[in-house]
Amino acid sequence: MKRIRSKNYSVPGLLKSIIKFIVFLLLGVGLLYWVFRSQDISYQAYCATHQIAPEDCILWKKMLKDFLSVKWIYIVFIFIAFFLSNYFRSLRWYLLLDPLGYKPHWINSLGAVLVSYLVNLGIPRSGEFVRAAVLSKYEKIPLDKAFGTVVLDRLVDMISMFIIICFTILLQLPTFSKFYNDQLAQLPLVQKLIIPGLLILIILILWFTRNTWRKYPIVRTVKSKIQGFYEGLMVIKKIKQPRAFFFYTISIWFWFYVMLVCALKSFEPTSHISLASSLVIYVFGSLGMIVPTPGGMGSYHYLVILALAYYNIPPGDAFSFANISFFTAQFANNIILGIIGLISMYFFNKNYQPKHI
Image 1 (tube, rainbow, N blue to C red):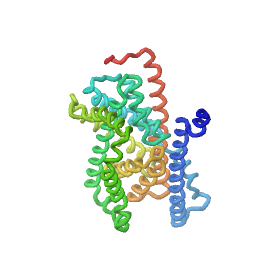
Image 2: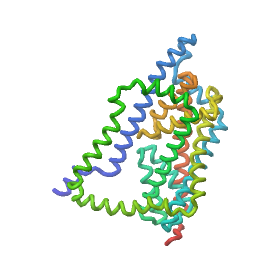
Image 3: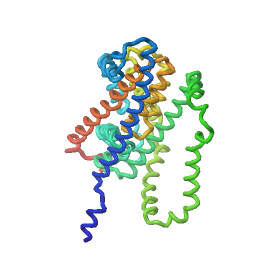
Image 4: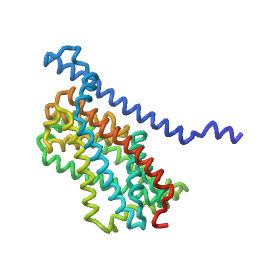
């Protein structure tokens, strides 16, 4: 009887992963379809205004035609820039692990980073844990400490992104002022306060029930894990090469920015956009990738198209560019380099022994 109950009520981990993948994929596809429908309506209006024949005004056909018209040398540069960005990320990660006494080989640290991006295409936000787990497996680093450094790595990214956003707003203040007036100023006060209100409510509930949930054994287990996690976070104070850490951080974001500039240059209707204006599109696209869909599918398209509208890019061209940028810089890059990372680590680690063992 016990065996039968286990079969009936337990869900295998693989099945859970498949369900999560399907849910996130459907969310991304749904958002992308919504963006397509809204852009198709705008494109039809654009065609009517500019007296373009209906048979020449089919959005998906235009997108395919635009894909074939890109300057493919820039697509090659996108792949190179993506690799360099993640190579510098692996070097920065090494600096975070070094104070803990671990010196991972660059093939393992870079491979783990590339694999994390590949995994994020399936189940968003799971790549960070997989990245720590992969390095833990091959370099024999405790998982909680490895994961602590990954969280710290992402925390530095958040701070860096905030600085980039502030810099871009100051540099392109008229564009952001127009965006606020067009998109946010008209929202009712209640809608503006929904997210902050929910966060405050959750914090208050956790605070007033703290004496209850602290008694559970699982909380004590989690607390012990947090000790190792905290140790991983605190290595920021012990970094031996702060200048190198700063240089690697700048390099990561610089090469990500180069990816977008190359994407803009590869497509004729967007090739004239200046480097300063490219920063606005870069910021909008980065914010779009926060939404938990595969690679930011749908949300990335929406915000990039929104940003391009402020530079008078027609709706059809904006939709084509969003897809060119997304499926080269996101999907193709992550899949190809992620697979290369997996294969490289598999063969390299057959006879590899970590230095600290």
